[in-house]
Every structure is written in structure tokens, then in C-alpha cells.
Amino acid sequence: MKKIFVVIPNWNGADFIAACLESLQSQTQKHTIVVVDNGSVDESVSIINAQFPSVHLIKLLKNTGFSGGVNTGIRYALEQKADYVALFNNDATADIEWLQNLVSTLDKDESVGVATGKLLRSDKKHLDSTGDFYSIVGMPFPRGRNQKDNEQYVILEEVFSASGGASLYRVSMLEEIGLFDEVFFAYYEDVDISFRAQLAGWKVWYEPKAIAYHRVGATSSKLGGFTRYHATKNFYLLYAKNMPGWLYWKYLPLFTLQAVRLCASSILKGGGIAYFKGTLRAILLVPHVLNERRGIQKRRKISIRELDKKLYHHRPPKIPILS
Image 1: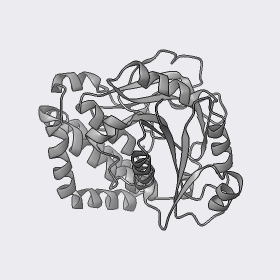
Image 2 (image 1 turned 135 degrees about the horizontal axis):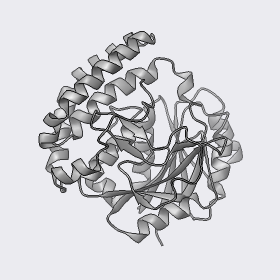
Image 3 (image 1 turned 90 degrees about the horizontal axis):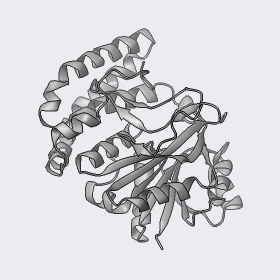
Image 4 (image 1 turned 90 degrees about the vertical axis):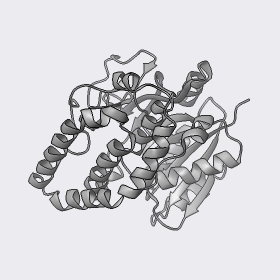
């Protein structure tokens, strides 16, 4: 029997962590729950200790971001000889068979490294994500976001990326390509790891029967310019690290135009300082990017043309974070 762990990064999630953990404890699939607390100053830890004694709680002294938090939980799962590791947002809840359906997807095909599901908004009527895609202009976007759920995404199919908020990862894949890049801190780190998985020859699948519900913005709404800063930084890192070979140069003009558009939009919306800080940070991270890029491209197993077919060849229908 496979060992499965569910990792939940938590930062000041006292308002919703109980509902999250209750939904996970009700799953039909046997698993171990790990909460990584990123230095919360609210009642999160007290709630977990008092109401969920079976949950393995790891307390960090400071906020290490989504990437640092989930990596801490994943490393613990690896020490426990996990086969699969799921990630789940602290402001989300899951249908009772959410995890079982994701596990079944990975069990069906050993070439599938990541399985993601239908992530609905908390109203249970509108979509948040049915898998993420990556545009040739350099912007990731969640398929179906804000659409009313009319059962339009009901096919088990390949997607480019999985949402880090409610997806399942094969441990053997993580051991090959590495964990989440902690310099991302938050935003697009899930697309980065899926991009690396795609380049290494792994598949990412969307399982429509794996349903979860997300309180969109419950955490990020508290953070002000934080979102624009990290999304800007990671916009640059995502492309520079992963876009392979001649595709890098082919789509660089479109990427540059998108960067100009994001700059102008940020200024008009009062986020210019956060945008320029994010851009500066990306420049300072060039040594890290070059080092990562060498390893990523060295591991590449699919052809550049095959990767090109997986990209979205238009501008995103809606810019989800920076607009």
C-alpha cells in the first residue's frame, strides 16, 4: 500500500484552518496530514493542537513562504518514505473523494508525475482552476477561472501545470527534478515545478472528479504590495529558468512586450514601486537563475518542438494576478 502525505502550509489561518483539516480528515483515502506553520501570530497553532491532535505539526520560527513551507513538509514526507505527496491550501476544503481520485490518476500511469483536480471557489458555483497553462508571452493562467461551472471541464486530460493549492505529486518525480524553488517564495512556484516536470518528460493530468473549494484571496488579500512584488519577480524567473533552447529567443520579443505591459499596468494601478522592486530582485537573482537553468536544461528529455506544442499560443484570456 502506498504511503500518502498531505502537506498544508499555514500562515495566520485561524479563520479557516479548522474547516480545511476537517475536510481532509474525512477523506476516503488513507493518508497522513502535515501542517507546516510559517510563524503564525494568530491562534492557528492553538486550534490545531486542541482540535486536531493526530495532525503532524511542524512549527517554523518565521514565514518561509509557500515554497519554503511546502518544502519543509515534503522533506518530512520523504523521510517517512512517502510515495505521493499532496499539497493543499489552508483556505480550501476538499470533497470526500478528492484525494482518492488524485491517487487513482497517478496509479493509472507511471509517466504522470502530477495530478490536479477541479478547484472551485467557495461558492461552489464558479471555477478557480482546472489546471494551469503557460502562454508564449510568459504568463501562466488558471484555466476556467471565474467561469460558472457548467460541467465544461469533465474530461481526464493533460494540462501544462497543476495548482499548488490542491494537487498530488509523485515522489520519484520530485527526487528527479527537485523540490519547489524557494526563491519564488509565493506565486508561480507551482507552474515552475510543473514546467520542470514537463521538460524532464513527466506528464501533468487534470482529474475532474477530484474536487476542492478555495476561498480565493483569503490570505493574499492581507498582503498589499506583496503579491505584485513576488508575481513580478517570478514572472521573470519562470521564463528565464525554463524556456528551452531556441524557444527562449523566439518568444523573447513577446515576453518583453508583456513585461512592458505589466510595468505600465502596475504604475497606473499604484503598484509601480512593488513592480520595480520585483524586477530589481529578479536581476539580482541572475546567478541563481543561470545555475538552475543549466541543471533544468541538462535534464530535459522531451524535444523543444514537443514542449512548444504544450504551450498556450495566445495571450492569456485574463491575467490572474498582474493585470
